[in-house]
Amino acid sequence: MATAASNTANVNLLRRLFGNEMADLTFGDDPYLRGVKKVTTGFGEIRYVVVRIGQTAGVGGSIAVAIANQAPTAERRFSVTERTIYAVFTMKGSFLRKARGKPNSLLTGYESQARSAMYDFKKLLENQSWAAGGRVGTINATVTGTTLTFANARALIGINLLGKWLTFASDDGTAASPAGERGLGGVPYRVQVTAVDIGNNRVTVSPSLTTVTGLTSGDSVFIEGFYALSMMGKQAWNPITAPGGSDSFFGVNRSEAVEPLSGWRVTGQGLYEATVIEALTYGEQATVDTKTCFMNKRDWAKMVNEMGVQAFREPGGKKTGGAKALVVDGPDGSCAMTGVNRVPQGYAWIGDPSNDVLLSEGEIPQILNEDKVGPMRMLPTDDAYQSRLGGDANFMPDDSAAKLGPGAWVIVSW
Image 1 (cartoon, one colour):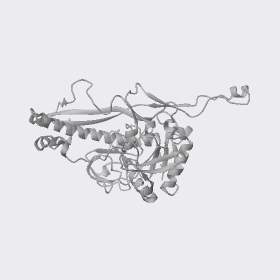
Image 2 (spheres, rainbow, N blue to C red):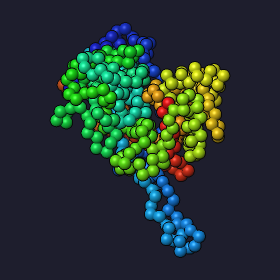
Image 3 (cartoon, rainbow, N blue to C red):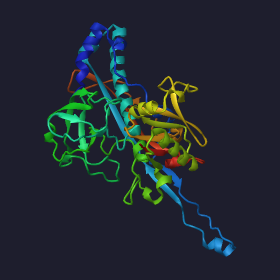
Image 4 (cartoon, one colour):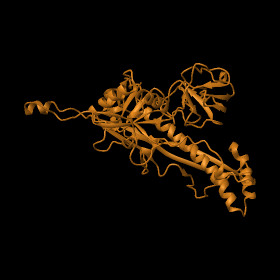
């Protein structure tokens, strides 16, 4: 059984006391995920999200007409199932033996590895909270050699890819029966990231991209294991492009009532501010709670340059990532512009994250220890001990009374 590539650092952690004192690239918390309602009561067999798209009462100027005009059911039911994320870290037996009788060193080593796994888990969860089907990006025009360039500028900020294995697909993996993964005989082609160049929006991979048959520009990129198995985040529930007639999302064809079932869409009005004002107006007409506009940080910077600093204000309450927030006023109040790494450049989502739910089977993540062996278990084919983090969860809109369900968001294209 393979063990983590970082295991060789365990002895150095003991000898040189790195632990909490070493520098670490963390990117910061995602403000949308921080605001999502966390519910840990679980799915049971399945969790239904029910949305009423029309009223069924019969109306008319006479009782006979009213009775005759009663409509059939107008509810649509999304059958949501959980998805799983795992993060595994390993401690070499040699490290544990050297740390025997030295609890501080043992704790430092364990905490370092556990913190790394926890952080990686969190970044995956943040990516899936925004992504369509868990993809980490799409491919630019170049698809040969060992250099993989992403289409969106700074697409690598907010996700950890070094050392990860990547797979590819012609789709985003959100369809009812996704079948676009590049592979042979049901086994996906994969390449490993050996270097990351965030500034130039590219990674170096091995083996060459020519080993991935059918790979082309525009293909979706996934961390191995997440194609069609990812949690369904914002771009899945509230996609940029309105669902078409063949849509089947958790068993619902959303084209039947596009806005109530997938959100309200506004395209660019030339200027960032003008576009946001139009989106706020549209959303507030539909009773959307236009509390926050989540946009890529590059778009946020462009909007600041367009509007000037006079529109800044100090936000109330808990600090949410920046010292100040940019505000645009709509018909019913102000909306804070918030920059987020994992929002694709050129798009934004307006709404209140507390109208969405992260439903999980207990805490997420949690140390997997259902057999009560303990937080670390011996590997049968290596002198090492392994600890496993995991969680079963999925994102979904809040379908409580007086909530709008998937229709609680406005999707903006600049």
